[in-house]
Image (tube, rainbow, N blue to C red; front, side, top):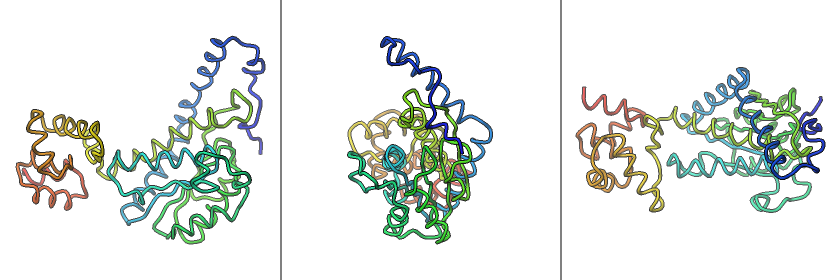
Length: 299
């Protein structure tokens, strides 16, 4: 298997002699290949198939685990952490696991990614079940930690996906769904925190965001389940209520507090012209989708 993630980039063979402006222009030019690689029909189809599996498992009460080493693991943890305030989910719903444990987020843990039993042990410690989904992330597509985790996930009946940046990657043989985003050689040979890391960030955003949209966490393009955990997010939540309903700021603030600081409930109260309990019941009856809840209340 040829690993393009480890190949030398013909456009950057003399980058060490370039001016600062030329270095930056070259990096930028190379980065532009990333969204084009993700936009290939086969890649988008694979991502879509994985999203649909994730949504199905979420509806069964399952969880999504990202597992990876180094940059791959860190990006999985980042995406998982950001899902909590953005979509108002429980931290258990989307989780990121990294070879070497939480400390590896900051300091590299030598040799952790080479342990094929490590990924399995970490998933086992989180009591993985057949209702869960595991996405193994490895730019090279060869990380033993990830392969071991995927093999364990399949053994318990969990759904699996393999996400790499090489064609016919080794981890692709260990998962139900294969996502291969070939971004080509890095600007600095083998530095997969660059184009491969950018591809990983973009694809993980796509997976989690699309899944949450399919779960009713977005109304129009508004993050209606946002957790207002600080002043900025309180302001955003109230502006979301305004945007969704057309009320003024004072009215939005009133309903925000009346709905126990839950924008989604406030929006249904306003649009459906109902009290909090009725809004909650309507949302519960329509799997959290605002449009369906309001339609049922106003028909």
